[in-house]
Image 1 (cartoon, helix red, strand yellow):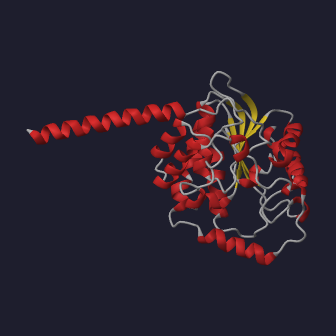
Image 2: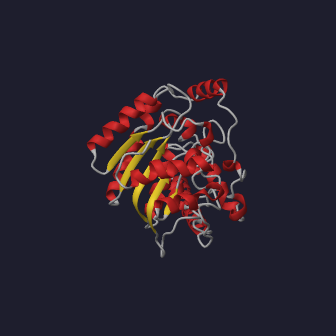
Image 3: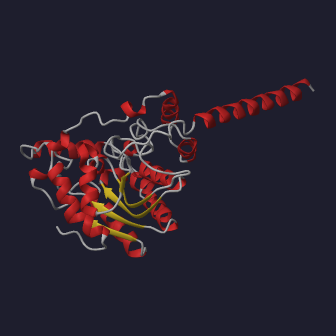
Amino acid sequence: MQAKLFIKKSILFLLLNTVILAVVLGICSGAHRDLHLNNWETESNLLVMGGGHSPAHYGVALLGTSRGRVLSRDGNHLIVEKILDQPVINLSKGGGGGLMPAELHLSYFYHRGNHVNHVVYLVDPWVFFSPINNEENDFFLRDEPFEMYILWKLIAQGYPSNRISSYLQMIAVDDWQAISTYAAPGLTQGTIKSVDQEKLLEAREHYLSKYADNGFQRYSRYVDIINTKVKKQGGRITYVMLPMLIPDFPGMDQVDQKLRQVAQMNDHVAYYNVSDAMHDRRFFYDHMHFNKTGVDYFARRVLKPVIQGEKPLL
């Protein structure tokens, strides 16, 4: 009898604490929604998007890693919007944000009631293979305020406990305008002096060392999840394999095949591979990222035609 009473009290205590925790987290959620920054002022996605009582409509949304994020840094966002002649939101994440982070941020964008005509996913092949770009990525929420919706997504999609706990620590942050600012302004103004083949080989081996044995099977399914979300919202999506200075990059053929197949099977999906284009050093500030000249050229020759339903002019 005493054992049953103890169990009942323990369950009641657990439920009570769960309710209290949920209430506290609910109060903390969205505490910084009154702070709205421009895409070129911050690395945060949550602080730039509309939603709630003021949902926003964009012509284009960009997804990708830091190689997509440079299209907004150092005022490049304004260049891209001028070339495309429509409002753009950049949901790419620095620190190697992969398919799982991309799906999470796009899901939250739609959850907030926002809409976009055309999603463009700027593809890096390694995000299809590496946990460090997906559930083990510890960068993609470091500059994002706490939201209950995102917490539940992290739990539901099986992110490791240390990623979840690190996101909970964002509750204590109060100066988001400072913490979310890009830490290395002006990088896209520069130009790489020369293409160093030895560094490219080192980069190739570095990325390959991060690949998981079943990575492609685990992460490529997020392409289908993203495509379904975009279709449900009445939009279109185009995948663009970004220019790559590293030849024969591991896994690129497998990713290329996957994206060609989904484009053939879905009317709202398109895919272009421009990995062999723009290899002139004048387009890059390092061996991976576009400089301001590269951003301008890429927006004119790739993004603009793609948004118009045409092939890239490369």
